[in-house]
Length: 433
Image 1 (cartoon, rainbow, N blue to C red):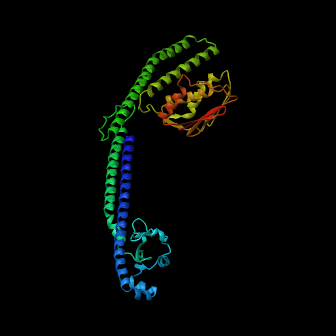
Image 2: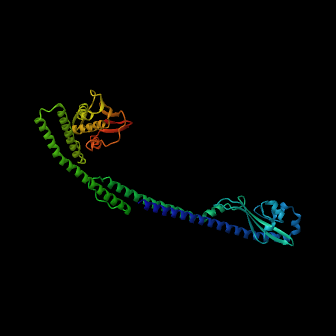
């Protein structure tokens, strides 16, 4: 679609430039032709004037010779058209005239004085050298400037280029109409496309592809629908795998949990150390059971949180500390819990909240060989911070392979704000309820 719009823009731009150049050439040609015709007409007028002036001079040459130059000028012409009886006299009146040798007898020469712009006739001087007697040349001249030329000349130029002005206005109007049509058509397609695209969602059957007036939009819609169908199919397979895996793992976990309860009843004479190991095993199996429940729930896309209850966060964090205490047995870790008496409450699923806190605390313990784990609890937030006495090498410590990934998905589902900050020798997790 972008290539089509670019091509259309190029065509419009080329057309506009071509039109502008053509109109410019036409206007220049009309004005040059007008000025040439005007100069030719004026030269014809000067030629006829020269014949009459020389005839008068020849008839009364003695009388004209006795008159001063000012009177001769008045008798023979005006400021606009007149006769100079020598080149020196012509040069005294018009110092800008070229050298005498550049004039040709019986040929009018136009001398440009001042260029007034494209839409105005220039100021110029027409000079016609005419021999009167042996060795004597008269220089008749016609002066065309703002003071002497026809005031209607500039309007006549505008009249000449009226067709060009009309064609320009019509062309601009047509270009605007064409572009408005393209813009309207594009807006219609974009709105139609946006309305269809807003209904698309991964894992949901796509609505039928509408018919657009542009083939490029049809191609884009087909490509998006095809790719989204592939993504939806892959998501469906992943969700099915997670769902089936969770169901399959439920049975062995349930069997393992039941057998451990039976084992505890049978072996009542266990030593404290053996009973501690059994308790750790029971805690791990219970935690794994909850993890499977969470995975099964997350695999059902779009399902709302169920079995919500008012959960006192301090009680859940205390249980999380107890459940993960075995991770600190052979380590030099000190746990500081601040604000346990002032902790707030949240209405959510208690199992999922416990899973989140267990995984966060497990990750803190697993990534600290020696140091402190600080837990700060307020009315609407919880901060878990682990600071190691020395840096630990990077390793995967997500807990059952899914711990922190599961936390990230669960807090999103539970509508809990989750922020992680990396520290030089640890990290800080901030939960806002």
